[in-house]
Image (cartoon, rainbow, N blue to C red; front, side, top):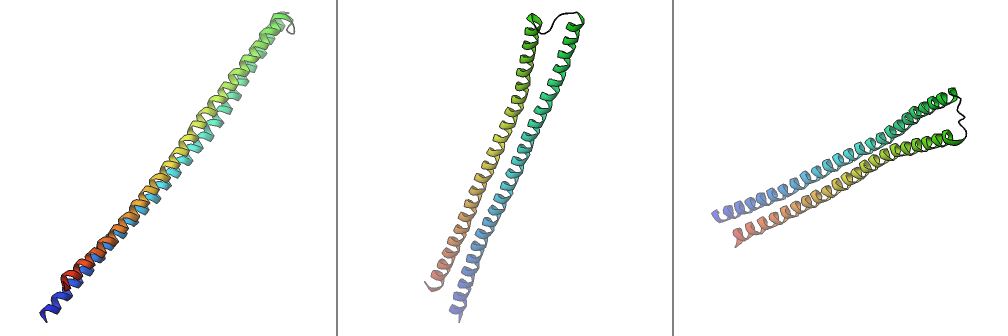
Amino acid sequence: YMAVTSTGALLVAAGLSAYGAYSQGRAANKQAQFGADTGEKQAQFAARVKEQQAGREREIAVGEESDFRRRQSAVMAHRRAILGGSGVQQDTGSPLLGSEDFAAEVELQARRIRAGGQTRAGRLEQEAGLQRAAGLAEGRLLRAGGRSAQRQGLFRAGSSLLSGYAQAFG
């Protein structure tokens, strides 16, 4: 009777040990999956923020370009008024060349303002893409680690059952 009881106790202990190993592996997998989901969501959110910032940079550049053009147009109008008031003919010679040079410089500066905004926006969009990719890569690693932990739990469970069986009947 004592041999049956100790054999049963060994088998129960092996079963409990196996269940504990399985449960630990499963819990580690769930934790890894949760970490992966959370990390991916955070990366997606950070990427969306960068994309919004990129859009805002473009809007700011358009506004700055418009403001610059408006200010320079006022300067040009003031110049024309001064030249007209002094009796200088504006559509020939040096005054015309000066006005053309001024207009070309204004256009160049306005395009530089817009290009600066596009460059900043492009950089932010690249950062968004990198954050998204890094979040996905980290998520894949965490998920793989979770699956590995679950497999290890299964192996430990199987080992516990086999050890318990060997002790009980060995």
